[in-house]
Length: 107
Image 1 (cartoon, rainbow, N blue to C red):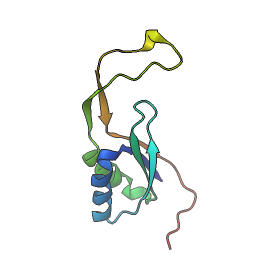
Image 2: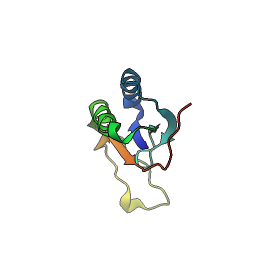
Image 3: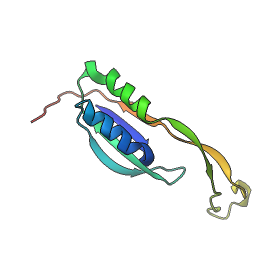
Protein backbone atom coordinates (compact mmCIF):
# COMPACT_ATOMS: atom_id res chain seq x y z
CA UNK A 1 0.00 0.00 0.00
CA UNK A 2 1.38 3.37 -1.04
CA UNK A 3 -0.06 6.42 0.69
CA UNK A 4 0.98 9.69 -0.96
CA UNK A 5 0.08 13.14 0.37
CA UNK A 6 0.40 15.76 -2.37
CA UNK A 7 -0.51 19.42 -2.73
CA UNK A 8 -3.85 20.04 -4.44
CA UNK A 9 -2.07 21.81 -7.33
CA UNK A 10 -0.32 18.52 -8.16
CA UNK A 11 -3.32 16.28 -7.55
CA UNK A 12 -4.94 16.32 -11.00
CA UNK A 13 -1.64 15.77 -12.81
CA UNK A 14 -0.80 12.76 -10.61
CA UNK A 15 -4.32 11.38 -10.88
CA UNK A 16 -4.16 11.52 -14.69
CA UNK A 17 -0.72 9.84 -14.72
CA UNK A 18 -2.01 7.02 -12.51
CA UNK A 19 -5.04 6.46 -14.77
CA UNK A 20 -2.82 6.41 -17.89
CA UNK A 21 -0.62 3.79 -16.20
CA UNK A 22 -3.66 1.68 -15.26
CA UNK A 23 -3.05 2.18 -11.53
CA UNK A 24 -6.10 2.40 -9.31
CA UNK A 25 -6.10 4.91 -6.48
CA UNK A 26 -8.50 6.33 -3.93
CA UNK A 27 -8.31 10.09 -3.44
CA UNK A 28 -9.09 11.71 -0.10
CA UNK A 29 -9.22 15.44 0.61
CA UNK A 30 -6.88 16.45 3.43
CA UNK A 31 -5.44 19.62 4.93
CA UNK A 32 -1.80 20.39 5.68
CA UNK A 33 -0.91 21.41 9.21
CA UNK A 34 1.79 24.03 8.64
CA UNK A 35 0.38 26.05 5.74
CA UNK A 36 -3.24 25.03 6.38
CA UNK A 37 -3.57 24.47 2.63
CA UNK A 38 -5.45 21.79 0.76
CA UNK A 39 -3.81 18.45 0.09
CA UNK A 40 -4.93 15.26 -1.56
CA UNK A 41 -4.08 11.90 -0.05
CA UNK A 42 -3.82 9.03 -2.53
CA UNK A 43 -4.24 5.48 -1.24
CA UNK A 44 -2.80 3.11 -3.83
CA UNK A 45 -3.07 -0.65 -3.45
CA UNK A 46 -0.34 -2.02 -5.68
CA UNK A 47 1.70 -5.19 -6.09
CA UNK A 48 5.16 -4.99 -4.58
CA UNK A 49 6.94 -5.30 -7.92
CA UNK A 50 5.12 -2.17 -9.21
CA UNK A 51 5.94 0.13 -6.27
CA UNK A 52 9.03 1.64 -7.94
CA UNK A 53 6.92 2.61 -10.96
CA UNK A 54 4.35 4.29 -8.72
CA UNK A 55 7.10 6.19 -6.90
CA UNK A 56 8.50 7.36 -10.24
CA UNK A 57 5.07 8.69 -11.27
CA UNK A 58 4.71 10.53 -7.97
CA UNK A 59 8.17 12.04 -8.29
CA UNK A 60 7.55 13.16 -11.91
CA UNK A 61 4.22 14.81 -11.13
CA UNK A 62 4.69 16.28 -7.65
CA UNK A 63 7.74 18.54 -7.67
CA UNK A 64 8.45 20.89 -4.80
CA UNK A 65 8.69 24.63 -5.48
CA UNK A 66 9.17 27.91 -3.66
CA UNK A 67 6.16 30.08 -2.77
CA UNK A 68 5.88 33.41 -0.97
CA UNK A 69 3.55 33.10 1.99
CA UNK A 70 1.78 35.93 3.80
CA UNK A 71 2.47 35.92 7.54
CA UNK A 72 0.17 33.93 9.79
CA UNK A 73 -1.38 35.78 12.69
CA UNK A 74 0.03 35.01 16.10
CA UNK A 75 -1.95 32.29 17.85
CA UNK A 76 -2.23 32.35 21.62
CA UNK A 77 -0.68 35.79 22.00
CA UNK A 78 2.89 34.62 21.45
CA UNK A 79 4.22 37.75 19.72
CA UNK A 80 7.81 36.48 19.62
CA UNK A 81 6.97 33.75 17.11
CA UNK A 82 5.05 36.08 14.78
CA UNK A 83 6.77 36.94 11.49
CA UNK A 84 5.47 40.34 10.27
CA UNK A 85 6.67 40.04 6.63
CA UNK A 86 6.09 37.54 3.80
CA UNK A 87 8.43 34.56 3.80
CA UNK A 88 9.44 32.13 1.08
CA UNK A 89 8.55 28.51 1.86
CA UNK A 90 8.93 25.24 0.00
CA UNK A 91 5.60 23.72 -1.08
CA UNK A 92 4.53 20.81 -3.23
CA UNK A 93 6.38 17.60 -3.57
CA UNK A 94 4.94 14.54 -1.89
CA UNK A 95 5.11 12.74 1.40
CA UNK A 96 4.92 9.01 0.72
CA UNK A 97 4.36 6.08 3.07
CA UNK A 98 4.80 2.49 1.94
CA UNK A 99 3.01 -0.03 4.13
CA UNK A 100 3.05 -3.81 4.01
CA UNK A 101 -0.38 -5.36 3.44
CA UNK A 102 -1.27 -8.90 4.52
CA UNK A 103 -3.83 -9.36 1.81
CA UNK A 104 -4.76 -7.43 -1.34
CA UNK A 105 -7.99 -8.28 -3.18
CA UNK A 106 -9.59 -6.47 -6.13
CA UNK A 107 -13.08 -7.27 -7.37
